[in-house]
Length: 148
Image 1 (tube, one colour):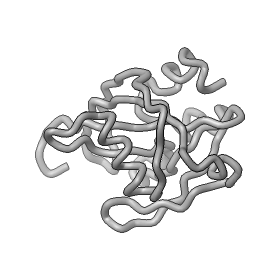
Image 2 (image 1 turned 90 degrees about the vertical axis):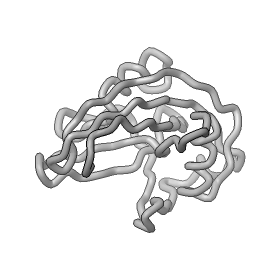
Image 3 (image 1 turned 45 degrees about the horizontal axis):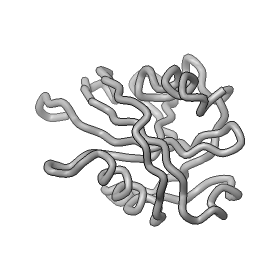
Image 4 (image 1 turned 180 degrees about the vertical axis):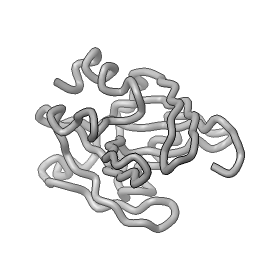
């Protein structure tokens, strides 16, 4: 982040058989692996529900339905040695293509062109050094019965 600002985000929880779909990141500065659901920035004038549908379409090339807001989190963090501050709307949704749930991972592409694999993980994947982010997401998902 070159200047300080609060970034609005929309993330979506896709769940299947006790697992959720997440993208994996590695922070070389603190040596931690981070897992985050699919999603991204909310653009000016865009509603969060529209942002999440757009982000999933852009990153995975898939359409979604049954979108519902399950909560909002505030995340203040350090990533790659730089401070960040996000207000994060967390949505639940379903892929329109049900065959997606049978795939072990989904190939995706970030807005900067970087390729990634979104992989289904259960709660045992998330530890003190392999965290599910943003902070508070694990508790939110447990309270909504979306993660064991």
